[in-house]
Length: 291
Image (cartoon, rainbow, N blue to C red; front, top):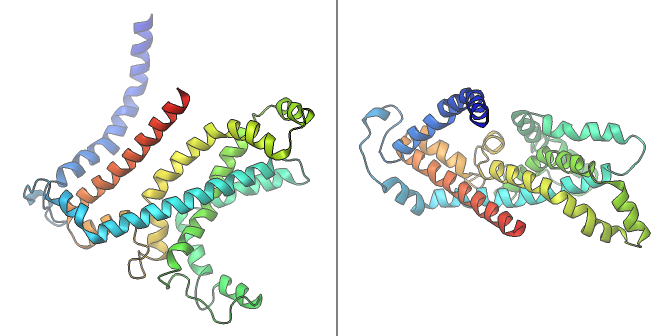
């Protein structure tokens, strides 16, 4: 019976495995093969084998290393902000107040907005001539002259990060709120009776209950943030002066703008490897905690 059940499950999983192999596995194999050649965009099949030269170049290419730093900073800032803001909003929406259901429904709106639409919207908000942000700050008296938020080397990356946080904090908030709904009220009431204050209840009851769900949200957001491409490309295309050029944008430019598919594939493999290393360290950390 056990063997028969195993065969049934295998048959049910087979179509999904075939589709994943065709959509994900085969392109990965092609990318891996390309990374060892000097293939060009218009003549991929005639690339010569160059061994690990592309990988060596990637690890010493100052432009690529700078792009990796941008991706790392982007991931660190936006994920930290989204985790803190999303959890805080979830805690607020878990408390009873008039209109709570409506506010909960509105929480999903930022995340539901397509990334392309979100990027275009914030690009208009940041517009140095007629953007809503400059107009608001000017009317409130915070600035005298309009600021080019996306055209300034020291403000562009922070502006893009703010736009990303606005969109994705709600995902963390929804995950945390769903977890809070499963927290028994009896535990909170018992802690109140024992004299535990708000901070003690959060630290010893609410937070431990939230951690498993927040860990899932953390992994999802780290992976997405490290390989960020669309929101930056639409808002700044990696400028000004490459200050917002992420590793994904660098790979795209190397492969399709500069037509160097071989080195572009190698740089992509390096980036994927770094993401996998981060995930493995994270999983090892979790296994140690559970042990």
